[in-house]
Length: 126
Image (cartoon, rainbow, N blue to C red):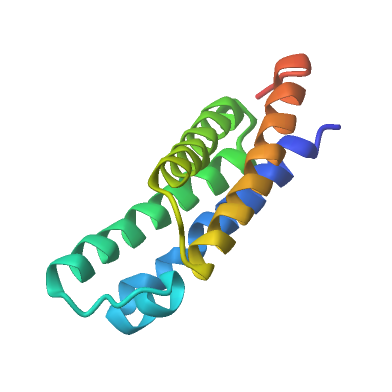
């Protein structure tokens, strides 16, 4: 049971690190999201988003390794995947690449909820 929270946080960190490749430019962003990203302003916004995902991945990985940060990591992960899933639900039809992201985030949400319950029942000691 003591490995559920850190393992979940590491898996979700890995998932959040994947979009970091988008920092490399519009071509990589197009592959990641299945959309044309050649408009410079959109490319800038999505590249910045990639940086923020990298920072979130670093936070989640750090939280996985420091029991005192497990709660913070779980909240950050839940906020990220929960917000994306809610926005995806409200937005409507998605392309195939984003449907894959939704499926991965749904799996992450389930893992985070289970890990959150474990954390509440058996909090980690620093």
